[in-house]
Image (cartoon, rainbow, N blue to C red; front, side, top):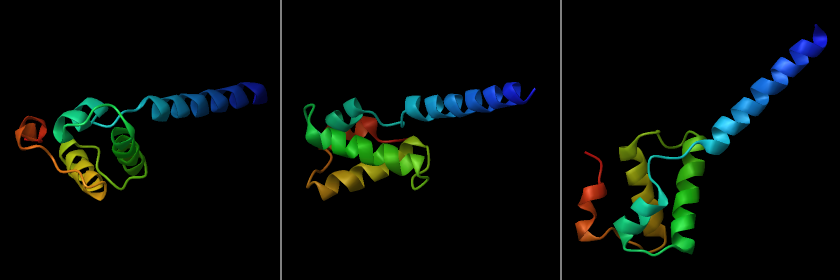
Length: 92
């Protein structure tokens, strides 16, 4: 019975790690590129990783609006501003 409990606990741990690993924020790389007129590259990765970490750490709500605001703030640190035609990606 003790082995069964140990296996059950281990399965739960693996399942949780998979859930966190597979989770994606509501803003993806394509939205970042479209919003700032970027091509795939370092800046996109920096913004995307910062957003994912902030959300996993509970610093940013898991909503598109909060993620968008965080993305814009992170991009500003890289001297990037949203394009004027990027309103399509702004949360409603």
